[in-house]
Image (tube, rainbow over all chains, first blue to last red; front, top):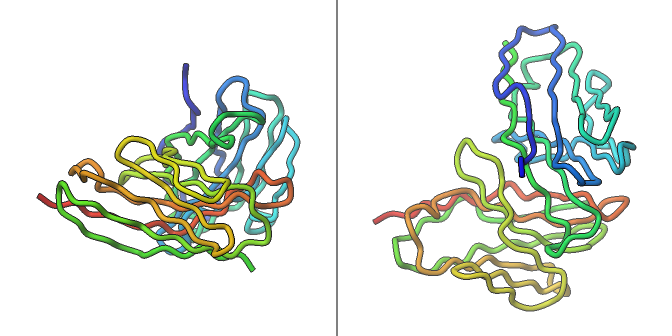
Length: 116
Length: 111
């Protein structure tokens, strides 16, 4: 069973460019989460979806960030325009509604974004 | 506000026992999780507590006291491969499913 898939694994871009990060959750999972991790701030929740519907986007830093989930097997996180302070590792995670271990979240390998 | 505190760094030697503490203040509580994250990798699930008490899973145990807003992760018979960051996370949020993570404790195990 494939885990959470993210692409690209690494992205280097210049300030002002548009960046799109992609995520495929584990099949059958109902929740999808986008996190950002930096040394300074740790792992922060940006937004999460339940059955493709955004539930809480209060962690999205500003209007430059947007996320979509057009279907149960695909989500994107877009940054437009990108800035150097957006450099971080972006993780996607998914979970089921009902699961033995408290609906544990399964994380993808992450996308390491560097904005020059 | 919401706050999760854990020590930044800890060191220990192979074969020893180490306890990583976590205190939390959150607006909601629907379970506490511990994740392990090796450098350059994704976090992986270790344990879950929703009721007070101790949960044991092999060499790892996790304890929760909801009244004190306190948890710890206990690692026994330490191995070099246990060198990693350990993240404490509380489930709260609007729909009770979002995780709020602490900044993690980096554990270094030496021989």
